[in-house]
Length: 514
Image (tube, rainbow, N blue to C red):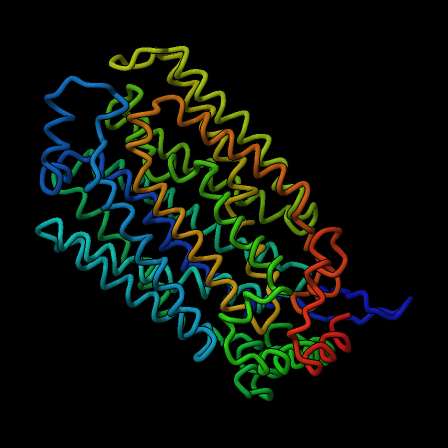
């Protein structure tokens, strides 16, 4: 399956040949297991925090309030320590992704992925053996370091090994694994809470399975050609490129990676370079996509789905089963995105997702406002309406902002600032995920149904931003983004004349990127 790149010479095309080889698929599937680790943790958090055995051991005040105090349904789980259990992971991931960026640049993507699995596995052991809250949080911090390393390295790895014409679909394997992890976690939570006194240990312990798969599997995958060439191993990079493309005719693509690596070698401090004027468009897009992704309200639903459904009147097992249904919808939506992203493009999917999420989130708020009884469960029709609108919201997110907020930042930065720029994007995601995880239950308690209108407002704002400022990156090679995207965008092109860039680097880009 070949692809074509339009060059700067009229009526001339450079062909990037390449098949979807078995080895390419193996590398992508194994690396994407990093998303399985992340997704399982997202799904498991809300489930265990609704289990009585878990609350009784680590958060007895919340358990007492849940069982014995008659208070507002929205405030049952409003506890800062309980929120810290969820959010501490993302604070650790925020810090660790900067170290992961340096490791990616210095030692490669593969080693960074391997280290992520080790940290995650150790964190799982601490969580399962935790006897008090301090040990539990320590385990969560190690899990967070693993997540930070994986979220930094895996999307870059997938984007760099993918042929450009299927880069979107291959990268979305990461998000697909996140959704699989969430669904598996929801199923595990349902059965663990139903049949096991210490189901929380079983739920938290199974997180070690994807970490073990990633750790063992990482010895079977290759380093990316880009990373090999960047580290002076051009011959190895060429051989790997031939292997994953399934052809010996890769000279055009090899030369493009080689010139990008030469340009990148001129940058000694990539974290300083991302703040130059010509990097401003990518930095803004990469960071704002992460902010907007979290302020869709998705993790408010995915973290705390069982807690949310209990808050509106579902019984414990019914709330966990509803979370399983939401997780299934999430998985199906990710498959839709994988199949559509390289055909319809990034921008159209994001805009459609905004419309669907806005209407769904507003509808949830409207149903809860109409119910109006803070201490009474919803009637059956209203409760099923909330579940239906939540599923509609999650499906819209799953084929748009879920995968694309990871995909787009991984493909828009030039090689010399790619790891640093993506680290800023990942850290932004972890920062805003931490904020939402830490404050959502308090927001739900104080704003009640209004919290859903709050997220609806942000969804409308992000839709406007995408329509006006986000360029389309479908079917454009990563090392040609500057010339074919940023220099031609109506607004961002004004930032592309950067006088601080060396003449040599400018010449390299002008000679090869067009």
